[in-house]
Length: 423
Image (cartoon, rainbow, N blue to C red; front, top):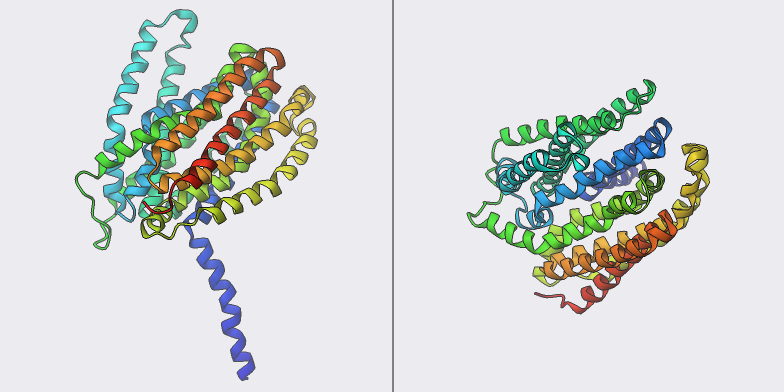
């Protein structure tokens, strides 16, 4: 009997370990990212099955405009907020971030109105499209702000549930559009707006109504000023990173066509998922890394090496699988997209490693170096886009992404190891 009694704690230990891991913010953020990635993959398949490459490219173009505009509203405050508002109460954190977004959102709304009124007819998509872009930009900015709040205040589980609701709602609406043979790009874009707005607004209201925990960290009056200051230092990095990720989708229609963008996006939407787990890990660890750095215990080398091993293991699997599945899943009209699979997958692997190295620089208080790294990557990629897209089409865009991500990573690696471990 004593032997049997001794087995119970041993059996309980693995379960306790699993439960502890599931409570980890990095694991919960990763779970939400995996779900979001799966829905993005399904959405991509539904769209390419329902629309021509030209219409698929139009939806992609609208989404890229929103993603870039969102970074302008945030002004680089996401990561600085996580580092500065560690362990505060949810309600005050939401109000604090709301104050950070108020002026940029108001300026963006005014700019959209002016654009709609004064822009030439051939450059004006119409008030309906502009209104959808404005609403979805504010929704996306609020969603990213809620992610930063969730990490800072320890409510990552709430954020994960919010993303689950958004994913289920989006997938349900997209399936409905697919079943009804809807091919209008505006209608598909509207589904993203509704799915993003409903759960995000609901959870922000819930957080505002939560009682303040007496053990929560206090909020100093000048904390928002510090977040804004660090955010502005990181803003060039944020906008350059988003431009490096998204400007190819803006350049391809100008230098090639929206049909080429549809082909390119059908692959790029899949390959960029490779970096999501690493980005989620880096974001969730930012507060701990800064605390470790302040205590003198941050060791960058093992963290970067582990990320590199992940990329080396995953890249060939993703590249081979995606290359073989494009025609069976997307259809023969998307066969020309196979040419960009390998360079885009390798680029995604490089981008994943760069997220960790740049996160370590932020933890060390080197936001200026992060901005330089992101600007370097954007400048290299944009130059290659302009040089190669007119000659090689979507393959030139893929090479541009590969060159830009590689340049950003090289700069980040060099500066990470040159910066001292202690402040």
